[in-house]
Length: 178
Image (tube, rainbow, N blue to C red):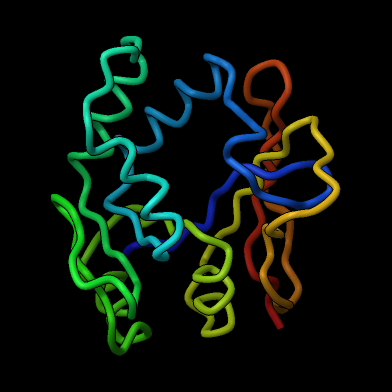
């Protein structure tokens, strides 16, 4: 059975903005290895549209960016959206019965399925479907924006902390037992 993991970069004050927190080479290598290791990714519409950047070739990319794009393109993706009518290569649109779909994915796959997008993660967390939260803290304070947590959750329990590269700390939490 797969584990559903919500992992995303965030500022010290709890906001997500991929443009404000570019990864250093060590963190980017970590993300390349991470993408290669997951069974697939579950995206909300907005985050999927951001990630579609990796579907196209960009001549200015370095070797690491090409590696990331190749890994991202190769993994299965499920996109939760009621407004999209189609999705790109190696992606499946999920518009109805999201809970049943995610439960089915968790039952069908082994390893980890990453969920990306705070709103999607919040709705799946309320359903008890998120098994782990990985918060990648960057040494920036944004002062506003989209929060990592898009709503309240039951208590969480810290299970790991790791330094990745020069400036990022990853904290890993699981839902606390009642």
